[in-house]
Image (cartoon, rainbow, N blue to C red; front, side, top):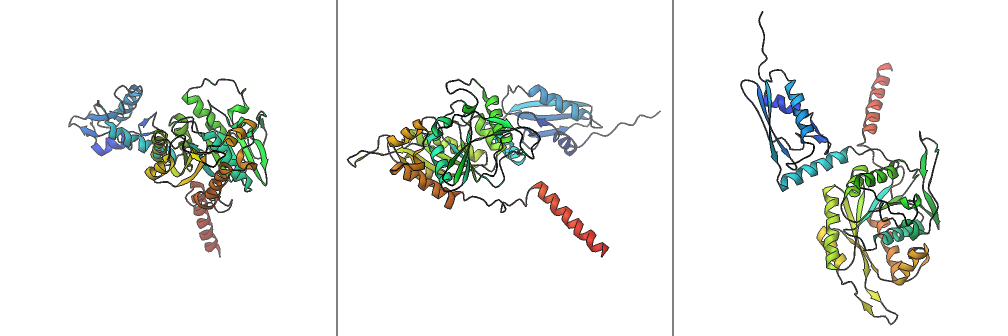
Length: 404
């Protein structure tokens, strides 16, 4: 009896096989991520695969190794698999993370945020710059113009939106028409002809309760607020981001890739430098930075003199550095803090320079930076489902033509 031995596979054959090996953490195949710098096949059928990990001590190394060996060994003509491990340098790590974020963006999961909604994440490089105060005042100013505005408190640890808006009711889940499961109902507050729809962990726990959650739980909480909340027909969704550039920020970029970012800073040069990291995170996650807001700018006393208590020029410098417009400078006024303590944002019915600044920022958002979409004018031509509809319509037209 003659035994036929398959010829060794080609390098292209093995590369194609390796394209089915998924890095479990980055969510894409190791070839497209650039983790396989080289493949060689000997005349006897031994396959040598060079694999570069983001770090040498990667905890998923054993899992990746098993996947490579199992898949490559099944190919006809392979007599052995030899993996040569390496470690990426800083530039290679940056490139692979960029590719991973892009892949995640292209596979964004469904959320309950309508496609017609303009999503604005209000971010900062560090805490203490008044980011939450800016969020509620801009949201209130947008609602005062007649818009329906969602406010998502994504600062899970340091939630402050409920107090700033004077809302204390618990959120409840109810059956909603068209949904296959109970949905969380946002707390609502009418402002003039507009409406605020507000979601926060502060509506689930007591205000003085410490949430001792780690990164994964924080991300899951934000995901639930995007997937399981009956947001309705929003014109805008403002997201009060936690400070920094951690898990929640990356999770949001994956869940809502159409998000635009507004960076809040104070006039101090140090704050401006830190805020630049938030902008860098946005660029790396393929999010558009649409503007900078400088908070706590000069204080004007009753005698009319202004004092730059926290320095000057930080907002303009940051805007110039990241090539984004300076949307406004909000002066330091006691009325802003007082409005937050009483749950009456100064932008609703307050007077003074700070109230005017918030209203002017809202005007720029609506008129220039992020005009609201009409519910019927969202371009869905690139949507997979819409492509299938187009193809089906084309075939229906052809079939109709054949029968006439």
